[in-house]
View 1 (cartoon, one colour):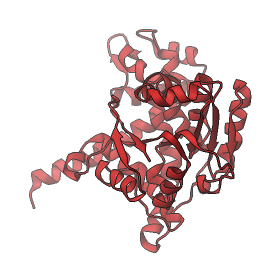
View 2 (cartoon, helix red, strand yellow):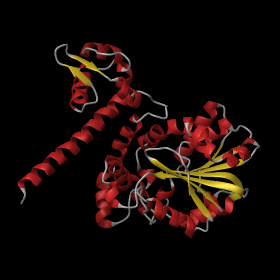
View 3 (cartoon, rainbow, N blue to C red):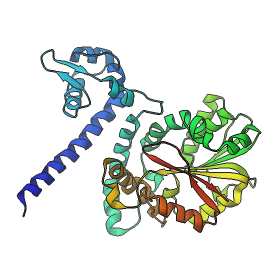
View 4 (cartoon, rainbow, N blue to C red):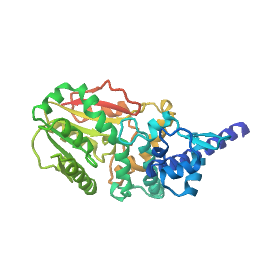
Length: 349
């Protein structure tokens, strides 16, 4: 065996384990407000961080040292001070913005909690249905995506579809499929108060939280704990959205066929999917590795739990477009939207 190659692999294992632990530490930093407590404060002593955060001193000490070791924080050994650089705070202490990255860390606990069941499914088949994930999984998905929906969906993404925006301004209708906690619907309804906005999701707990959020915001949105094919509403929609949902579906073709039938003349199905390549060799990077992990422990296994297609998060543009064609859509344009993580399709009947 090549000993140099073996050493490289050993270093890679340590690096990946360190990455997992760093992500866990960063999760604690976002959940407890430690990053926010250090934001814009410059160099801080350990006791200053303890006082600013109001947390237990021994935990803060270990967290600070771990975050220095992972290069999330800067450390001045002579002064024994810790600094959260402004560039890091922009990504880690910016909850609710469209540039907040800290929400991704919240996915680790609920996903890795089902890892033993996924290992069993590898042997025996089946998978883990969404209903079996901890409630924190809904929170994590919201934490990752909410800022984008609130700040980019209407002001950037939908501006690429002016005919849809015009229809919604004039009292049109929109349907969000797999709406989760409902923030896509909320964003559209706030921007287009005359539009009728509906969200559907088979997870009753998500729908309950969506209704609570809408009521708290004073927004008259409608949420139904059902699937798009079982929705009793027979009307047509000017906009239908599938936001990071298509690859999760157990039966994507029947769902897409049903959505095509629900589009109004000139209506658009907006599909958002992970930005990955069709070619595995072009996916040898941290982003794709993260998506494959999300897929194994969440997206793919949910579908397989219901005897579904198990498409997975890394579906890729060619297979995605093939689904649209198979479902009978006439066109699927890739929208010119800058995003490091997503691809956007405007699909028309």
